Image (cartoon, rainbow, N blue to C red; front, side, top):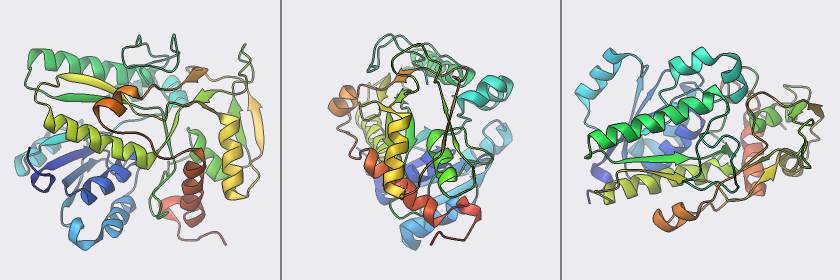
Length: 332
């Protein structure tokens, strides 16, 4: 197998939350990395901080292209300059509620939550796939496209990674999740309430006809565990010639409710998070979490961090960057 030092990885959406953390880990593992990002929901400051984290020597192995994947001319210019050994595709919009309200944006933008409300939990890779919202459907369509291409052209090696709710941040507090506008995901919303940017947290689903209400269950995973999971999948891809197109769940295998996450963040931050209970949102499932046995067995990967570490690192990020990448004032 070719060594990481001679392999070049294209990371789409590499300035975003999951992408930036994965790029840091790739560089530290010796890969050369090129990022394509249109900066729709990210900023160039994330790239600068990646370089600061890995140092000047490894920064020489990082190239950034401000480009849009939908622009064929952009891609042809990049691919004419660099030969890539693999692609990790992160680029895409990812908010359930927004996708229901603005489905055209998602079908136009996303080249990529495929379980919907599962028949059984934890979800396994061969569970029935059905999406409950436009965001999920874009991901499901991408999986089908990947399978069709691999069937027609068997030389393709494709791994589909399915994960649910990435949270936390790099332990340095230098990179983290910084969505533009009002956040659509739980933890960035909580962090903005904690630093006074938003007045209260809306908790959706008090009207679900289950004993869980308002305790919607999700599989939260630390973003650094997720980054390492991508590298494990990448190594599997390089090492397995006949892998075809296969899926792996990346998660902790444990479900955590919204209220449990709020309590854990309050403990980590010492901040009280005001809550407003609201009706369910269109497109939300009640309980979704993953079985990770296949990834543990075949990728040699297992999540290391729990909810306590997720909230600790999330608070470290926001307390150092209360206004995200654009602000320089730290909390006392």
